[in-house]
Image (tube, rainbow, N blue to C red; front, side):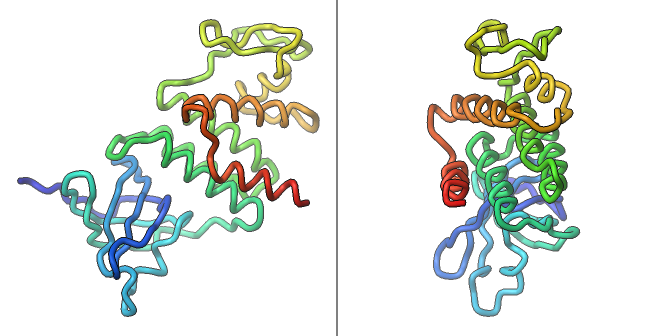
Length: 229
């Protein structure tokens, strides 16, 4: 049986869980191989030199040997600066990771999602972090075949609803304004206003639909965090 060997692949760690007494079970998102499940043998051991590197939201160069569903990690190196995320922004990063874990299959390359992920992480410390999340959701859904269908002409003064058959259509009771849709379609923020809340609700519903009606754990935690403020 042939084993595929991958060397120094740019990747980000999505999650790390204990696996046996001294190992870790990793889920990583890689540039050319998509989501990958790996076993890091000995990474939890007292003499491990890799444990400190194996943290989510850290850019890495991973090496592994693919054996069936799970790969065996054979090396790890740091690959650049770690995004400076604290407080609510850290939850944003975890949210991105959970989206990838729930919506992508292992060993299925997604170069567009990779670019969107890297660009979004870079934007999270900035002033338009939440808008960056909406753009990532839009791009990820498009990459897995469930992109939003925007009309050619959007009136910022109208309200819109979403039809699975027709996409966005004018609707006086629609939950999303034309101003919000223009911001999302053109990927340009529209200043202050309710459009941000409208987009958050819209994309929450579109993502939840792909999750079979379930809500992401990080989304729940973020909502609880905001309720305490």
